[in-house]
Length: 475
Image: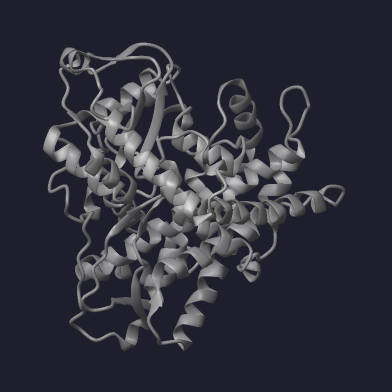
């Protein structure tokens, strides 16, 4: 099997290097947009997609054609493009891209991957479960889980991987709010397999050949084994809950919800929605918190302001302090968990006056949009005051950590409340000290996470000494 996989990859390199030179120069010239793409670029797209996207934006501009094997994709990095693709022309741009195809292989037809009338129906059914009044009922669960983590870290003074700790915490919260049970104890099945899928997603998502994940290579077989293991857990919980008394968790709310015809979700639909919430819900929040803690360790003045904002409030209410939200919003500006959004043009159209043929995949680089110098002063700086009450909100399309338009994440309020509660609990009692000399490199996969993790010591605040080591992050 290893020999077969090697042959497949060698064939792919040959295929890419051959066809990447066959793009019609006349079409490129007619579109008047720069075009990049070579075997070297193709390798960078697969191994360092964030660096490639940022370098392409900075070197070539806001709208760039990229050769991706025999295909061309459009890399867009301006808030105006966000508005055109996700809002004004949303009906023209579908989610039928290679990345979405792979997500559908993993998640089925959940809210993240479905489209058309089916998506509209699912959204209407699921919407009541994500009302602010409903989500508020989970605050106690989130607070208890965060406090349990603090107690454990108080006893263990050894360095920890912050990304793993945040993932374990948000997975516990996802289990308790989704299923009414702590599934972190089944981490060998849920956490490990979710981690495997997330870590290996970019390899498959950037493969130009459709259906590559179904080719029985050793890596693909391991990927699909992890997926089957998750499927068994989630499907088993759904089947177990059928026939039981209703439970006021998210799964119970979804099971009880019906559309305008009185029809609810099938077991398969429930499986898809639950797995979507489990993967997207816990992974994105864990990523946002990891980057937030890193930035606070690098900016002690901000950390002191944040601690002062929560220290005088009751623990259960501290998360509502405006500065807590400001810090998280600014961290998500610099390190958006959903760092890129893909769409496919279903008919010939225009973006910024340039012709975009039907079938073109458009990639909105959220990471670049959040750093666009035309819309952000000192775009590389960490300044939570940008989001202070009374300050003008970012221009339309300039800030989209949860997407934009009709497909904006249904769980955005849940995620923000969870992140605010966890952060307020942590900063009241612990101080983050990063490992000295640690190079932090963002790794772009399903979410934006630090490659190799983020190692730090979490100390009780009264034991913190001045002069923290600092570390730098680079794309």
